[in-house]
Image (cartoon, rainbow, N blue to C red):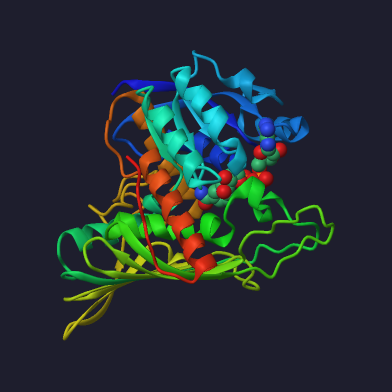
Length: 372
Ligand SMILES: NC(=O)c1ccc[n+]([C@@H]2O[C@H](COP(=O)([O-])OP(=O)(O)OC[C@H]3O[C@@H](n4cnc5c(N)ncnc54)[C@H](O)[C@@H]3O)[C@@H](O)[C@H]2O)c1
């Protein structure tokens, strides 16, 4: 099988920039369908000391504090792991230079900005993916397959909770600043599960929401702190109801993510802390736990073929390796379709996030309008 070498550049060496660096360095070994080899060409971060340390750890060849220096036509893939307000300009510049683009979520700080980002990138013809990681959790891919195969009948309800404890002792980070981040819990956490609802069931059409903010910046530097918590009752386009809840100030929750889908013939539930499993409930048949890593399942054959090590469980960082493999395989030209979210998905989620914010501010139910 020919090995596709993909010269890759990345903006951001922070938390998720380090995860993508790790994922890129593992991607070549994660699956065997297409042979991909990322060449870690250049890493940009305005904190050059951090960039250098991360580059040494993961093997990036060159570092710079200036992202414009890594947007070069000899690159094939641009990874944007910068903060939300750094998604638009660098990603458009990279696409216009002919690089495929893979950008962190939320796609932008506002729906307007996300729409511009999608439109300007789509006009260049490059591949674009938004990093809604949950699409690469094999158990959720299995849930999608079960739902599409009609095993749980017509879906009536989607329900999700995403809880994190993001409060440290020091000053608030950029995520709490509406100007830099956009929405808070809705954009940062809710966007993931809104995309999961769309991935598993259908598009969000109406929202009725409430949100609250408790956090305040002890330094006074951030004056417009975004939401810490939201809850939303929504409608999906195929007739199901959806409930989303997220908090970033839920003490001691490090990555609590619960997703449930109820249909006319059965129900599915998923818990982020049991990453390889989905629980399927059926009337009369009772409750079954299904692993997503058996032969033929979405998680089978990760790194090692099933049969040597058996169907081994995989972890959170493994899902990032699967996601990295996906954008590299797309950049190789060997595949044209993938489960990953496109920038259109990223834009649509941004529009839903803003509708939730409008509903929370007004107290009124909002219809979600999408631009083409
Ligand atoms: N998919 C996920 O599960 C997930 C998880 C965490 C974060 N994220 C997303 O990843 C993005 C980054 O989040 P993070 O947690 O890594 O933040 P972070 O603050 O840890 O890292 C951001 C990095 O960008 C650098 N930076 C900021 N402005 C820059 C500029 N103008 N030029 C060059 N470098 C610049 C900073 O120095 C920092 O190192 C956000 O969009 C966030 O929502 C996604």
